[in-house]
Amino acid sequence: MNKLLTLLAFFIGFGSASISMAQSDPAAKQILDGVSAKFKTFKAVQSGFTLKVEDGKGKVQGEKAGTVYMKGGKYRVSISGQEIFSDGSTVWTYDKAANEVTITKMDGGQNALTPQKLFTNFYDKDFLYKLNGEKKIGTKLVQEIELTPVDKSKAFHKVYLMVDKAQKAIYSAKILEKNGNVYTYTVSNFNGKAVIPDAQFVFDKKKYPGVEEIDLR
Image (cartoon, rainbow, N blue to C red; front, side, top):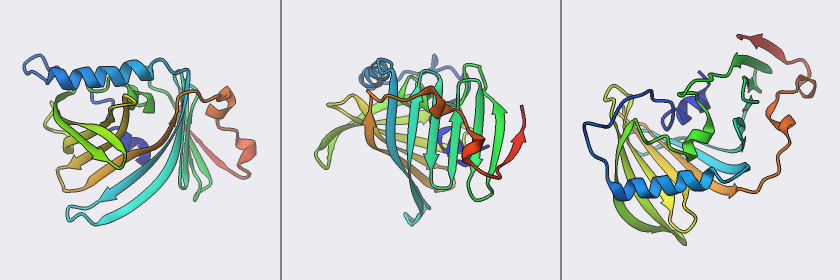
């Protein structure tokens, strides 16, 4: 699976585990529901982000900046050396170093792996969550929500989500793996009024001379 979407998978597509046997914090749910409801009002979104990877000793192993575009069920993710396009039915994953694009069919099921789910109700079935309180990050007042996966077989054991209180938007998420690695996804900018043409979500091989296509559909 594509490395970037594998990291985003920490937030989304975890299956259909139920939380009916345990209770989550109603205050945390209210905040998360507010984030989800606001995101659903946007017709198209352009968001910048950074992705940082640290080892168990806190040493930074890598950091990349990227941009994600979303419109309805379509998305595009651009990050150093890699681009992912989806028009809602097909996914193109382009590797710049290899000048190679892998084409797959979009999973149309409930657990489809899409960036949109990071900003919506990914938390409902797969996590227990609680509000840890508020704190300042720079000039932002953020609310920290601690999420624990219901399925204990997952490679990670905890997610700390920071929500911008004023904007009702995700500011960052920190994922703690059982092996000690820590992944931090931070939203650097967010435009909920973006104007994005549909062509932006389709891989145009004419723009990538000599690209090798691997069609797995």
